[in-house]
Length: 213
Image (cartoon, rainbow, N blue to C red; front, side, top):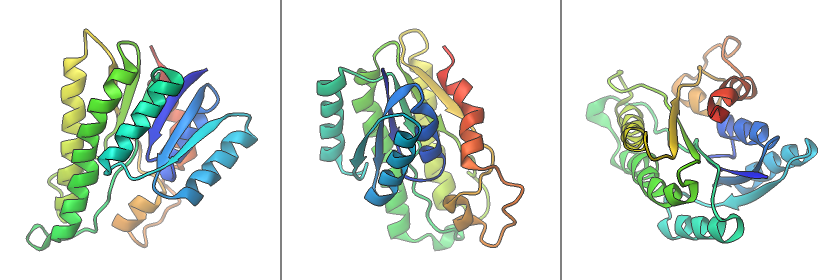
């Protein structure tokens, strides 16, 4: 069976994609919250799939090195990587950005992503696929921290995509619709969630784009 690494698999779209991809892939689910990962695992197993849980913080370099080494030792590589992990700092004016929030956002959204590209690329080889999820807010008022660091994450992915057009792996940048997730609720408290997409529906919509050759 093919293998799929999902970073940020414990909640939201990452969890929904882990469940959807488990129909065709063995899922390696990475997230910081063990209980949430176990819930995802229960759903995957109930649907007849299989997963390996990796409760870890992607900002811990040694943990990510060990994870990727373990993937190589056990499966000799990866077919797919979906990077859904992101840190959403509270909204604030640009001149009131909290230094701690900005640092954590940089660590998760930029530095960890850059390191993971380095570590995961050899596992994907020429034929694998890497997927990044865009959420453009750069330049919007009060989104200085999230908008800046998320845009930088996607800029890394776009550079990698340009560099691997002829050599692989395939690098895809997809833009989900607004979803009823905890992340969005932090930015829009009190919002009417009825018109928003459910992560499970959005995962189903994005799946053909993720799996297309």
